Amino acid sequence: MWHRFFILSLTIWNLFVCSPNTFAADFVESWYLSRGRANMEIENYKAAIEAFEKVVEHDPDHRESLRSLGIAYERQGLKDKSIETFDRYLAKYDDDPEIAFKQAQALEWSRYATYREKDMLKYYRMGLKRTDDPAMRLRYASHLAAQKETAQEAVAQYDRVLASQPHNSQAHQGLAKAYAWLGQNDLALHHANLARHAARREPGDMTALRRDMLKGREPAVEGVISVLAQPEKPFELYGIRMGSRGKVDVSPFTTTTLEVGGEHFWSSSEQRTGGYLSFGNQLRINPTHRFDMLIEYHDAPRGDGLAYKFEYVYDKPSVSIRPGVKREFRYDSFASLVGSRTTGQLIGLARSTLFYTDVAFDIGSVHLDVTPFVGWVSAESVSKNEQVGLAAKGAMPLWQTGKWDWSGEYLFYVTHYGENQSGFRSSPTEPTAGGYFSPQIFVNQIPRLAASYTIDEKQDFTIAAGPAVQYVDESARAAQIRVGGDAHAAYTARLSKPWLLKIMVDYTQISSVYTRIQGNALLVYTFY
Image (cartoon, rainbow, N blue to C red; front, side, top):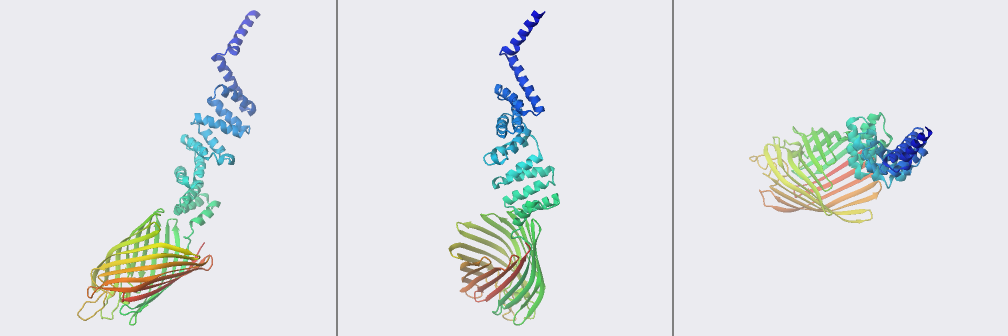
């Protein structure tokens, strides 16, 4: 019996230990796997590493051993070896989101973050391809949002989180930062507000972001005063206006202005006083597209005190296009603005309605602004008067000297009216007119030299002036070439952080018809 047992034992030894056949090899691999698994259970990671290393030496692509070896290295504190092993594992098996996310988070460590950032992002994408984990998607998106070049991709990732978790504060915070990178301040503010609402408090990093996004758009109140002097008869007109204006962002996408005040206009024979109300609103669809609206009602003009402007804006760094329509008062005379009864019947009240498209673009260092327009002028006691024309402006920087910044400008304006309604009653048998300057053809060319001077950090001064060469064809008399003038000056003083004072003066000479001097002053308080 003992003889038979010895023979059987010797046979088993030869089969399972001494012979290098497949069955023996599989038996050894299974043994090491079992040993590795058992030591992982009891947290003896050193022994587990030895076992799994044996299997990987025999089979470098062994899935379970590579995966388990990487985990054992990590738990033993051998981070470099763990990362190296997971690199090998994920290169072969990209369908394991758990290890992909683990490897991505490991590469966030500062030791690897700089030179292995692309790999970190790759592993996040690998894991998200297999499983939609909102927490991991947020981590991935936060890395994308940290760079302007990948901010747009971050937006897409945050949007996917919000699709399933619309009140996720972290996603809204991330979107606020990403949109700030992209220069989309309105959307950045919108999501900063949503983050505050979702978290029921202001996240710390959103306070600074909100302040940056609101620069130049802070709520403000302004005191406004304007004066007008136009002494030549019969186009005589004097006026003063005082009011108060407020500006506030009703939402991150809209800015609203409201102005109320009173005004007084007079000539040597008439005067008129009234109040006015102005409401403006800007709706920003995105940084490229917006709508601007302004509606005014003035009580001083007799009967018709409505003015408005509606404009669509397409604005890109290379070109700006602004089609719109506007209805404006004509300030050519007391009669044209307010209306007059000196002739026995109401005349004037000239109101201009124009459709236009303003196009601005750059050619090299030259900035061009071209505005064709067409419309009509309505006035009392006369028919509608068709008007068509073109306004253009070119500006080019010339030189800088110390605190001075010089540029050259050229202004061009041409318009045609259907009939001349400029004059007042010249005889009892002739019809009354609108009291506004409306020659059949009027051309105005103004070469101007412009300069800005920085007095100090809180004060600056700008001026632009030049002669005006004008061509006037009034049909009733021979065409004439006249020399006029044009000048503009502005002074700005930052009295303190919230207070700003701005004073502007304009001088315009239109042929031999009238000279207008207009001054405006603003005192602004900004709520930072």
